[in-house]
Image (cartoon, rainbow, N blue to C red; front, side, top):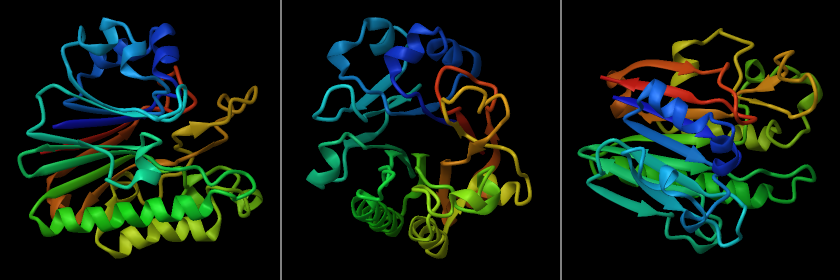
Length: 255
């Protein structure tokens, strides 16, 4: 089972560039989690709504052109939920939950703490609400994947210029500690566990000229799996060469 996650930074934009449906056609993910769609379904043409043949669950922000996630799947999920049931997060369209038998996939667009760190409390609350949800899902007997744009680089190896970014939102100690809370609770960053010493592999690059060409990036997109699911993990990839967004897709394969 192939699960792919991609912050597309505007689904209409990446589609106009010819990168979205061509990626689906080339890689054929079983579950494709997309973040930062920046669109309501009624703003999209049929080629993005249904002509690709995937079942889609959309979560949209109240504000048009902002946030939003969507989960595409070859097979319709057994059940689907939009949001966590917490208004402060759900109004921003940050979560879609789909279930396929005993497998639960949460597609999340985690908040950005902002340059002045003004949204760090909101980001902290989101992380902890998601961890609480994930633990409850595990207690109910589900194997769980939490994927998406986590908006935090966990370790020094996960960004190019870590020394100069220690006070930058996305790499502050409080934000990194939020990911550590998941690890301590029995969750695994799949790519890093499989590749503990592999550096210079990133999922996001600034749009400033030449930054991506020089590979000055951050790894902030993850597949985290619950401990119960680890034995089914087969492989993890980062599609660094895939263009169309300031992020690139990440891939998880389960047996």
